[in-house]
Amino acid sequence: AQKITQTQPGMFVQEKEAVTLDCTYDTSDPSYGLFWYKQPSSGEMIFLIYQGSYDQQNATEGRYSLNFQKARKSANLVISASQLGDSAMYFCAMRPMIYNQGGKLIFGQGTELSVKP
Amino acid sequence: ETGVTQTPRHLVMGMTNKKSLKCEQHLGHNAMYWYKQSAKKPLELMFVYNFKEQTENNSVPSRFSPECPNSSHLFLHLHTLQPEDSALYLCASSPSGLAEETQYFGPGTRLLVL
View 1 (tube, one colour):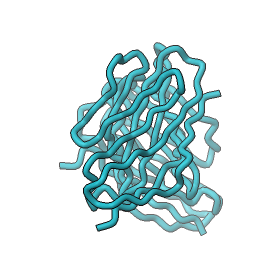
View 2 (cartoon, rainbow over the protein chains, first blue to last red):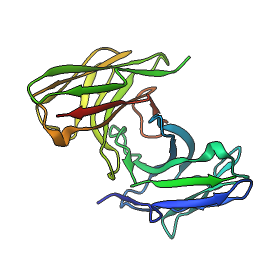
View 3 (tube, rainbow over the protein chains, first blue to last red):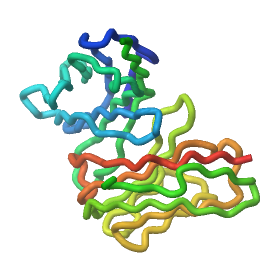
View 4 (cartoon, one colour):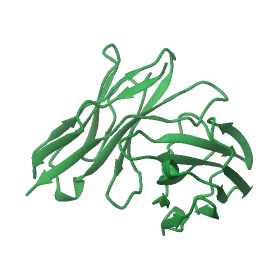
């Protein structure tokens, strides 16, 4: 069965510091994609970063980087230089890359990040 | 301009009511999705439409009825709902429904069933 686990229900970080949000996954599919989304209190899910299972390098997007450790099945999100606007729920998601079966994103329970001034 | 819009943003309905949620995407995408987000639970995929054809129904009760008249619009028709259906309903779209594509989400409709 495919599953995403986010073990941190809530996290606090001081403004301008870095924070790591944990994500582990379970899948038997040989090829898959990993995604991180941010959900502010307004409700919209905002795409942050993507990592393919066969990508050799860890993905980076501005202040976001994904610490991908395939053997450990982990895909942690690192936010550098936290800002007050980073306070939100963060969701890790996975999707198997099987031809003709695209679409089904599997989400974790989420981590609520609070950035302190 | 917001890529994916949803209306209404908030909805309160009784169990005997019939209502519809609307989603519109302005991104030129061909795949659209409905997700349900209940409190303290991960997002759950409900339906997938690709080029106006339904390609996935994730065992959703028949009181939820999707409609996709064209690639830009997606509806979720609601009738005889239960209080446990109260949740945030999110619409998303992606270019062609392929696995590696990023899905772009709308702001959601917060539904309360009394």
